[in-house]
Image 1 (cartoon, rainbow, N blue to C red):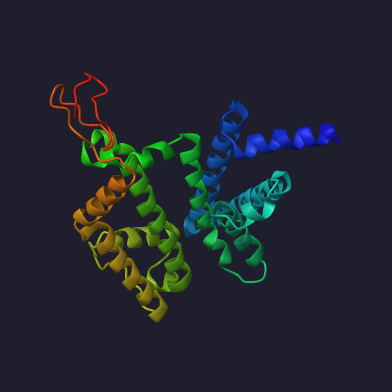
Image 2 (cartoon, rainbow, N blue to C red; image 1 turned 135 degrees about the horizontal axis):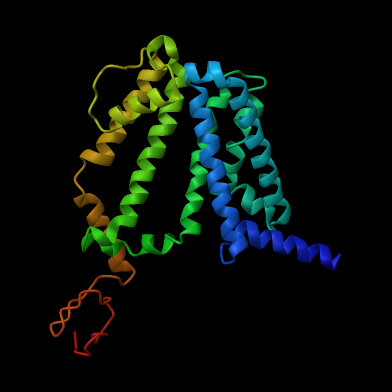
Length: 270
C-alpha cells in the first residue's frame, strides 16, 4: 500500500508540478497535444480539407479526446483534494474541453466547441514561470522591452477571444451566411474585435448579430479605451502593495519600493 501511495505521489508531482524535468516535460507535451487537437478541429471545418482527410481528422479528434479524458480522471485520482481541482478554473476548462465530443454523439455540431481546449494552453505560464512577471506590473510603466511578457499575455487573450467567438459564429451562422469554416469565422472575429469592420462577412441571424454587438463592444473596451484607465488602476494596486518606486538622487536607480529608506545600489538615503 505504501508503494502504491508513493507511486501516486510521483504521478501527482509530474502532473501538477513543474519543478522536475518529468513535470516540465509532461506540461510541454500536454500543451503540444492541445495545440494539435485545436488545429485538427479547425482544419476539419475547412470543406476541402474535410473532404480529403475528414476520416483521419475525426479519428485524431477522438484520440485527443480520449487522451484528455484519461488525463482529467488521473488528475482527480492523484489529487488529495479532488473537489478543489474539479471546481477550479483549470478543472472546469479540462472538463469542458472533452465534453463537446461526447455531446456531439447526440447533438451534431457540438464538437466545434472543442476550440475551448485552447484555454488549456494557459498552463504554459506555469511551465515558463511567467506568473512572476505578472506581479511585476511596474515594468509596464518603465520600458517596452521589460513589458514584453505582459504584451504576450494580452495578445494571447485577444487571440483566444477571437478563436472562441469565431467558433461560436461558425456554429450559429453556418456556411449559408458566409461563415464557411472556423478559420474564416476567426478572421471575421478579429476584424470585428479590432473595430476595422470590412463588411465582407456579417452575421444574418438575430443570435449572431447579438454576439457581433458584444464583440464590437469588447473591441472598443480592449483597444479604443485609453490606457490611462488601466494605468491608474495599476498604480493604485502597486501603491497598496508597497510597490510604488522611488528614485535615488545619487545613482538614479528607480526600482526602489515605497517602504525603502536607503538605495540598495549606492546606499544613499532616499
